[in-house]
Image (cartoon, rainbow, N blue to C red; front, side):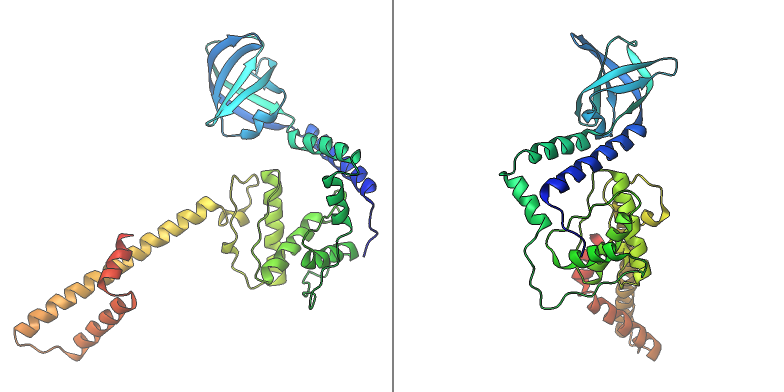
Length: 323
């Protein structure tokens, strides 16, 4: 196992890591183009415009850069509700703004994390400080037998230790600088959980991070030859990466496929019901007219009757068709 840090060293490293993340975010600001901004009113702090907007993260920016093509000005988000964003500008830009390109440093959550970590550094008696201590030095977990760990044979010692710890510890924290294989190791952690029949919820602070984690999981599941149907994975929310592997996993696509499948099944069952009723009607008519059914007709009738019974009877079949 690797060396265990003390809490102060951990907090120092965590703050350093968050600062590096903030630097990366500042280098690659978030962007959004808004259309059809409507001027609402002028207040002491500026002139306000309302835009239709589905990107909720803009509301957390302290200030945004608004590029009109011929000029760039500053704006401040003042409200976000019902997918409408209100921006305050220093000056008016007409009754309506046809379009504006926004860019901002999407580091709100990271700045909050950094601030909180610095507070915890000074509160050694706080519950948060003690909780971190327990995380770094967890009580041994008694298990009858440690689960087998599956990986691609390319994991290094630290990554294999992470896989082993995640299999037995209720909480597992993994930290490392960029390029040390955290994301791929995460994919194998999730794949090992799935192989053992566990249900996994994976969340992150950005859509891009969720996509990368999901792609890593797909690759690990494939390489490990896990007996797991990838369609049982579901990607909720808006995907940031246009990766074909995720297309079938998007919740909206899975719902559409499910609805289409239900419609196809309903059409198939309706065909069974129609053929059964027609066969019943024709059989009754032939018997009334004194005719006997041929072996082929009896076989067809029996096949339809068996299928209707398998679906739970006529009433159940009609309900399934209707629903």
